[in-house]
Length: 446
Image (cartoon, one colour):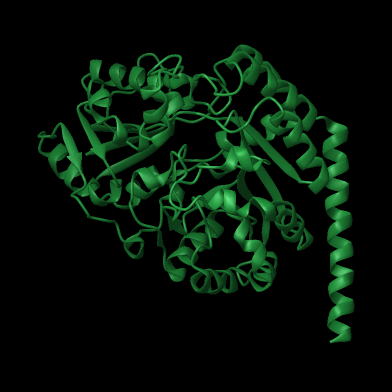
């Protein structure tokens, strides 16, 4: 069979004013370019699981938008999409089906709303695709696709069985970083989180030798790679993290990941991260205020319990030469209009190297969406194109939707002011030098 794997890429705000702001503010522009330049790791993994008797091609949706008619010489089309782009994915799927090519859809959105997705495709994959792909290919080869493929209860994909993704299918020059997954899932359950926790009930890690094999496959294609670890929360299991970081130090790469503030408690871990090429960590701080954080993490209110350590954690991590991209969610139920100034003040006090400000977004399948829908606070139910993290599609508890939208724009204008960015980054490098001198003195004294 000839199989096309199609990734929907390039999330943009639905609100025109936000889009205009994004085109001029470095914070949005830099981050949007990063998002747009990431290939779909899930599709590249499925490609690696595809037997060699099948021909596989990988496409970004932007490569197909101008094609009329679409290329129809495929036996199967597989599409995965972010929620914000799912309607575009449905249009694309409908066009392929009209051309007589069978389509299967998968990913987070299709997993939580399979009945909706099924209206636009021949089959839907629900859950971790690695567990379903071979059966899908076998059925498609016989011309007998089922309407739905679902991972059995309690069945989990073992990351020890993960293949090296087919990075060779990519035009490497089109990307400014490539992704490698070292873990899947998260031990925490934040109300608004729409990540791999919707696909797996466990937090699981990939064996170090598997991670290294993927990194070396990238290095075979790219002399000086920048790698983003596609994890929801790296380094939760510290012994495994130390083994991985020690191995990475020998690979001479630069990398970025997402984790939580607890890494600040572990100087040995921070040393290993720096020595292994870590350039930045993205940390979900969510709110600078205790009232905003209360109830966000639903298992043990973990975010609230960390709040008093936020400023110390940011300064500690950055003192090791690892920049922090602090992420804030505006419009949380416990925050009022003062949150915009509170976020700015926190960023200024701590000298955050980079900051990402978004609005609380009710993604389908999350506890947040169910709660807000039950409370009658979703403005446009099923308006998935509003799930961009920048567009407001709910009624905040302590301000109006209009005030939240305007507050985001005004705060972003201040946060991404070029002089403010320059000042923060100068403070970052100055702080790193001072911390390095202090550690040298302490080591000599010891």
